[in-house]
Image (cartoon, rainbow, N blue to C red; front, side, top):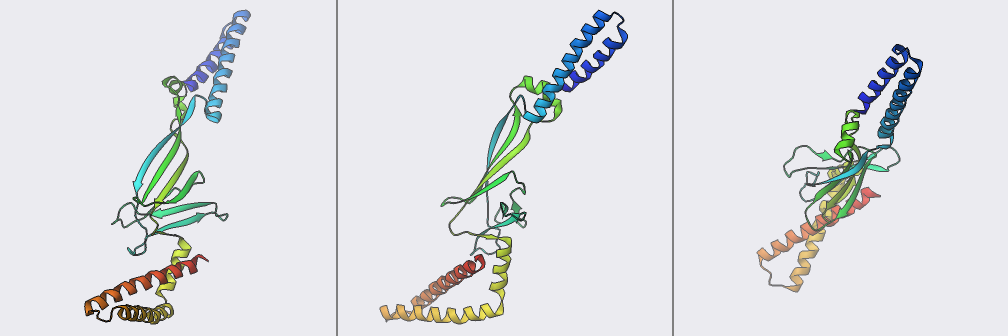
Length: 240
């Protein structure tokens, strides 16, 4: 409506100034419409620049998230830095366990991401802030300007379990390359055999009458423990 008011006052100012030939009446009406025109322009600019008649409204949504890593044994939260200053990051995740494509947080400087560890469900709590009109009257006057429901900022609080690893996209690629390298696999194979053998011998020393099934269980547990330890060391290496 404020835009319509500007047009109406501008047209009336022209009509009163040009077509009314009685100077006193012409000047009075022209002055009134010019004041109305300037007032309308003032509030239109104030609404556009200072969000006059509006207030910030925050809406909260929660989305369960899943690891972006293809490995179920190594859940990950990946991120990609925006710009060269490394002040803003985009975090990558999946919205379902079977999702083929990944999702990510907004690549905007107005988006703030916070990582928190949790024992509950892995999730992202998003708080988006918008400019909304304070009342129907303000919307009536300024609604045509298109400022309603204007995005301001958002904060993503990302809750992930303690077993998740947080890596940059570059670090994840480096980790994958190192883990697949033949030299690393050969080294780990030799070290794993020695680790498992030592664990089985220690278990048999404590219980010389261990059955084959018990020895197999110790072997499986020692293998899993070594793999977890080796991966932890490899992750620490790529993070340096």
